[in-house]
Amino acid sequence: MRPGGRIEAAITVLDDILTYHRPASIALADWGRRHRFAGSGDRAAIGTHVYDTLRRRASAAWVMDDATPRALMLGALALSPDMSIDSIALLFDGSQHAPSPLSDNERARLRYASQIEDAPPHVQADVPEWLWSAFEDAFEDEAVAEGTSLAMRAPTDLRVNALKADMDKVTKALGKVKTVPASIARLGVRLPAPTGSGRTPNVQNEAAFQKGWFEVQDAGSQIVADLVFARPGEQILDFCAGAGGKTLALAAAMENRGQIHAYDSDKSRLAPIHQRLKRAGVRNAQVHTPTADGPLHDLAALVGRMDRVVIDAPCTGTGVWRRRPDAKWRVSAEALQTRTLQQRAILDDARNFVRPGGYLCYITCSVLPAENEQQVHTFVNENPDFELVSAEEAWRELFGMDAPSPWSDDLVSLRLTPAATDTDGFYFAVMERRDAE
Image (cartoon, rainbow, N blue to C red; front, side):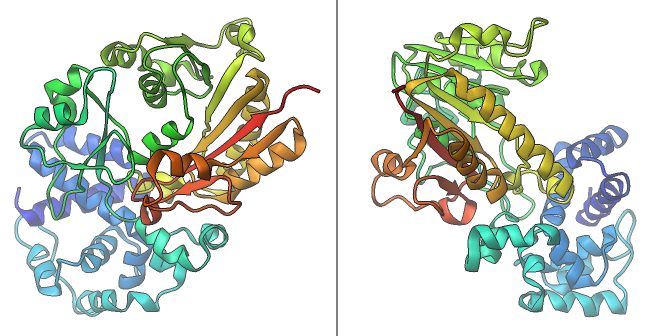
């Protein structure tokens, strides 16, 4: 396909997403099935255009004073640092399969891209307007910069599986794939975000991945798993294990000694964990699922016995907007309220498994105070046998004094962001259960 044809296809997919409120991944997959003539390079380029436009949806609409799919595409291209009005016009030339030529009004509006600093703050940051006050509460004067960082393309991060390999072994196995060490994650290898119409190599096709030498895992996820401070021989409950990414990281930190109990209330989310454990060579993980006798029946024997309980809580996902930009515009106040209620219920359930002197670790991939600081402070206020302890000390011990500093509003819990730590957005807090008096 010619570049203009790729743009027209991306506009068609955007129309599908916005009209029918469909996830971008599903809309792109459906387009690919209907247009089998498009090669893998075409599909990747179309996906890049779609995701870049969704990342900058608010600012692109402001530039063009229009929120139609064509206008959003034009605005996003104009905001790209390597696109001029003339280069955009070459893509919109009206040739076969390409978009129709630019109108005089469109040409005039494209110039507004250079004036984006005149837009309202939430537009500059590409944050939904109803969430802007929460962003200002979280980031104060840095709110625009933090929002903008969440509207950028994301790198691909790999975690070296210390049970089977080391950094040198993995980087050599990846051969010509361009990698750099992660800036903070101790076992992290990064594939930088592609530029232009480039695409990230599919490293899951590599033999090293099939052998279990590494996992695809954002550096922020690796860091919060490290902050759990799992040690060989401990008993750990991964209470919201999902597909098992953090379970695998914890098993490696424990050197396959002790026991990890991986549980999730949704069996379908947990399903991939079995194959992943096998590929990674994990031998100290036991998988638990809800039963007909009750959702937590299979965990009854663990009550009050766990050295650490890890909650990777369901959340709005505001911290992973770089990777799921369509979700940014679907999140609602109702969804936020639902998630906060779920988080409180999960904390109330998970607390029972922590032994006296053990730790409850709370993690989200959100940057919103309502899902983070407000949740843990409410929890410790209502549960006086739990006390917030400093994650900042663990950060410095693990990553050194020279590592970039995460956000910390209360000086004990931590908030990672693309702008501050060059990772996805994550929150981490740890609470110690006091000995019974």
